[in-house]
Length: 358
Image (cartoon, rainbow, N blue to C red):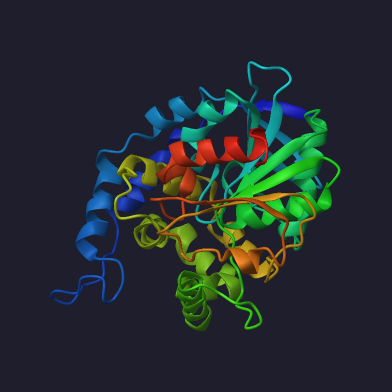
């Protein structure tokens, strides 16, 4: 059963957040620390104070409720999603999947332009946001993909495309494998490509591979913690709003294009979603459960590469795993493509799914 859903956070939860922020116990910081030891204290205090005294969740909640939200239960798990139908009844359906530390909020600026040509479905990954925490083992990438296939069946779509970045990339590719007779193509804006010494590379691609090797050899601390002990870090993030804030804000600081203009309000809405739904631990579990390496996908693939992403895909390596039909090198943008460059992403998705191949 699919049920309409309306966001209505209890006032007590908002009051509790304000109270906890007011009672934050701050660490000290060495003089002229900059970013050498982690997220700068002055910037974090500025964000926390604005979250406590200036940020208005109710205003953003009202704006979000202008979208059509729904929930349904699949495989024992609550699934939240936004569903915007195109004015064209014959439009192709398109399911958009976020990653970590993102949410369905990433796609707010692309829903309207994409809905001119597509029926748009934007679910929240199990364990994230309004889908709520997961309660059992096994909600890995293939299982989420199977849930998405069931969701699209329930919505009556027998042909559809899939798009995603971060975990959303792997889930979209796995969806192509789970429902190859229904998925017409997969577009991703993040596609890790593992080095292969047997493949000849250009100087540009060789530099990208060096960056990938460096990342593989120097695994980021957040990833290690969430992959190995997601429950342990979950206690701190679920109990401290400033802990949750810095855990996400640091990723945005490191992974976005310096020229991007993601506002503090947009950042805090995303952080608030994690905090108010108490999904820090359950969202982190996906790092523990997600398979490593490329996901097989038998349907056509389109790739958008962003210059300030964590890594940049290497086409000759990607083509060893996927049927790559479309490749774009964006002039700007970082890891959160739909947030940072919604115009470029919308146009590229439209080109991949709707424009004929040359």
